[in-house]
Amino acid sequence: MKNIFIINGGQKFAHSGGQFNQTVQDWTIEFLSKNSTYEIKTTHIEDEIDLQKEVEKFVWADLVIYHTPVWWFQIPNLFKKYIDDVFTQGHNNGIYKSDGRSRVNPDINYGTGGLLHGRKYMLTTSWNAPATAFTLPGEFFDETSVDDGVMFGFHKMNKFTGMEKVNGFHFHDVEKGATAENIVIFKNDYTKHLEQTFKNLQS
Image (cartoon, rainbow, N blue to C red):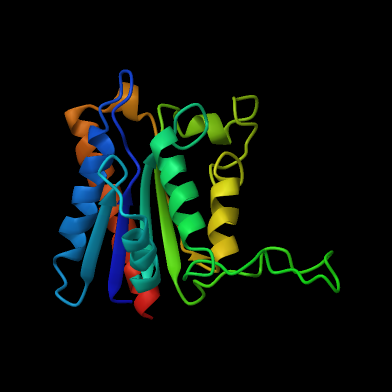
């Protein structure tokens, strides 16, 4: 687990400045930089994108780390465009070869045509919604987790390419709760998550 590719899916739009996801990326790099064995490549979806170079980053990576806010229960529009464009560029070019089915029996094996087997990915998301909106009876998300609910399709997208999910991290109540004190708590909790994640990956 040496090559780490970090994607910052935050962008400037309306009242969002994209600062929190940049901060999370900085925390990730700070953590990884303490270990000289890791090589790190990054992408910010607001930057000018060379599609082939982005495909090569996915192929190069042992672990892809996605940082994204969630807007209207989806990823930001530039992040979605990035994925659409880069993954399409990766067709028969390192990311996937087909949907996995054959004409002989088209009813089975859908989603098995990925080319990124052996690689893993981790997702972090940031929300205005509090964690309790996902866990308390009668609250908005009907006791459905981030990963099994809003981000279900995102995880299936990565599975389609052949990548394997490792436990992610979700930042809640970021908009209303981003006090200086809470930012320190966010960083401490996230760093502990990274420590445990990389310990598990190396074992």
